Amino acid sequence: MTDKLREKLINGGRVLVDEGQGDYVWGHISARLTDDPNKFLMKPGCVGIEEMTDDNIITVNIEGDKVSGDWPRHNEVFIHSEVMRARPDVNCVIHTHPEYAIAFSSLGKELSPMSNDGTMFSAGVPIFSETTDLIINQARGKAVAKALGQGGVVILRNHGIVTAGRSIEEAIWIALKLERACRVQLMAEWAGGPKFVAEGEDLQEKNKRGSRGDLYTNVFNYLVRSWCRVHGKANDPCCAEHYETDLSGYKE
Image (tube, rainbow, N blue to C red; front, side):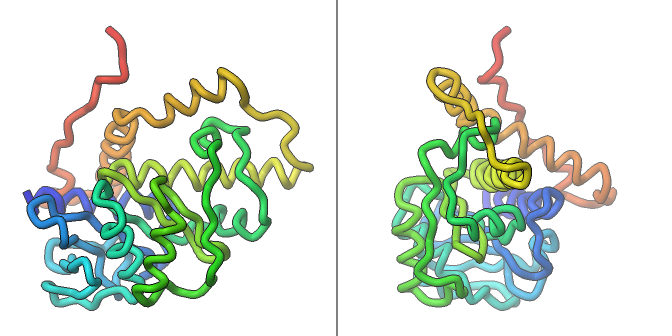
């Protein structure tokens, strides 16, 4: 089971970078161990999020201490450990520095349900503004987890985003949709600001569709296939991995 989780974590890092959420050796993703929920796999420091391998992924405990692996632990490990401590339902935490979300966070505006992506966040996205610096201790990690609450995303103002999901697929879906929502709204702001938004029954239905679990799975699988078509090697076990298609959202 741990080997499969490692492969999915590796592919998760790859697709995040392919979708514009890489930032040199910064940014990180973690996945809770199913057989030991007080520990999680995590991308190490010193490498890009798309450079994770079986050999460099580290294991960390709920206190933020590295318990196995040769590579260094990220200083912002407490984002992951404290969110997982506060949210037993969360199995994946992502922290990246996507450009549009950071730019949008500096405006002090609410995300508007003007795009299909934006409707996902019509209930509002919490902003963590206690500091714009790194989250380098447990106290700040707890503050981020508190700001996240029971939702799936929090924006760290002038810094980046944190997403949390029941699966790697869900956490990635939220991260990608948020960045797209911020990008579209910024484009509208450049043109004078949005004048029309989704509302009423349309908003409710679009929001419901954007939260379908099958989309998390099928989009993730598509992004992995896309990465592997361009970058995959013949002996790459993560490209040879087959993820099941979820047909639950489609009618005959």
